[in-house]
Length: 84
Image (tube, rainbow, N blue to C red; front, side, top):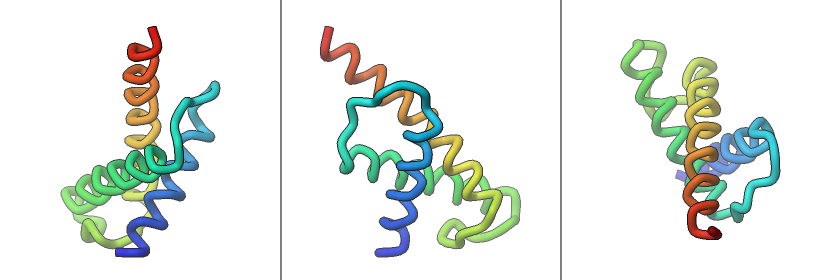
């Protein structure tokens, strides 16, 4: 479980670095976005037969980062709507 949290933080941080511009998100939001991306990546890797949802593999990691970048964009849109 601790490894899952650490992986979520890493994936969330990478997603925020890949997303251009400044995001108004804290570390808890980064963690949640990274964990959500990890779950999506694990499910996709599991469905493709490259590993289990709880395993760390290359395909799952790549899909997790892509999903987390999308989630960062969604979170940005949600926070921008609140500000205006």
